[in-house]
Length: 361
Ligand SMILES: Nc1ncnc2c1ncn2[C@@H]1O[C@H](COP(=O)(O)OP(=O)(O)OP(=O)(O)O)[C@@H](O)[C@H]1O
Ligand SMILES: [Mg+2]
Image 1 (cartoon, rainbow, N blue to C red):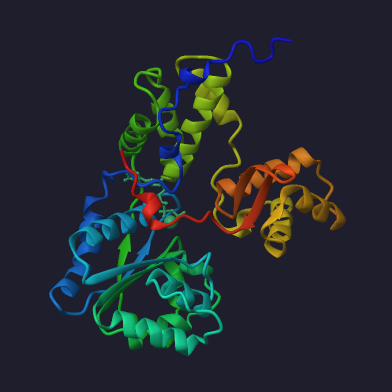
Image 2: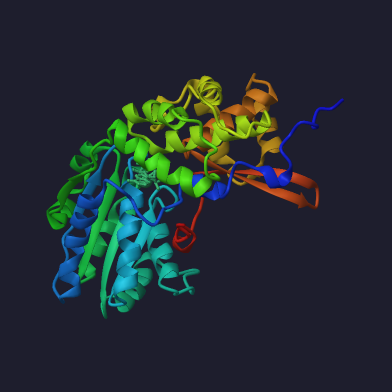
């Protein structure tokens, strides 16, 4: 009895806007990356003057702001001109040339892609883009299954900049020779943040996400110190959210260092990026999701057991949560569907459209 007695009432939440802690959220300002923003913008600038743009190979550790920086510059570009079209593609979600070209067609508002072959799609893109200029950002390129589209774009689109983004600097060496010699890209390395910078970034997010004065002195600093060594802002965001939830569950009006300690104790598994770094069981679960993407969690658990999985449902759920945290899978809750609430698990990172990123402050 009294299980739910002590909680903060609905109007007493600590969170002002929880969405600002989402990994895909892009604030109005991205501090400490001004040099990178300028570098990216400078490689696009020639396109605005009717010349050809420059190509970039952008690399750096996970959660360090590469995607955010490129989207930030694209947002500014869209604001400035309609003559240069920014196209962002996540190559984890669109991992073949065919999927990428179909996706670009859709982004250009050409929807009759059904039954079209790669060459036909390319013809459409050429027609739409060669009237203007384009900037392509191919993010997570290391997840590509083939690179033919790159060759086609480099050959067939006249005025463009092409950005390739990855965690792995060495990925560039396995680019197809034909592509590499056409790319002639400059390298743009995203350096790690130091502790002060990490704290600055997290403070900015705290102001957006939480009501004023809810953070006890020093609590946010603890999170920044935890996230700084890996430079992974995502880790900081996750810990902020988790510490906030723990504080709320204890009906506390402040998020204290103690809440942070509790959050830290439960998040040791955070920040595994490459599939190879996953433990065997997680990889096993991930493979099941990969071949059954879009299924309900209960169905996936059954498949997992049928395939010899020994873990309890709780463990299975925790593995999925961890995979989702690291963007290997996406989790979507459907509340009040025909069979009650359920959770759908998809292989790959969550889908978000560019417009959904434009909600800073
Ligand atoms: N300088 C910054 N200011 C504010 N927020 C930042 C900054 N750098 C990163 N972030 C935030 O950190 C989170 C992760 O950034 P982002 O997705 O750009 O990382 P990434 O380098 O692309 O990582 P990955 O290689 O894993 O894709 C995002 O929520 C982003 O808004
Ligand atoms: Mg990214």
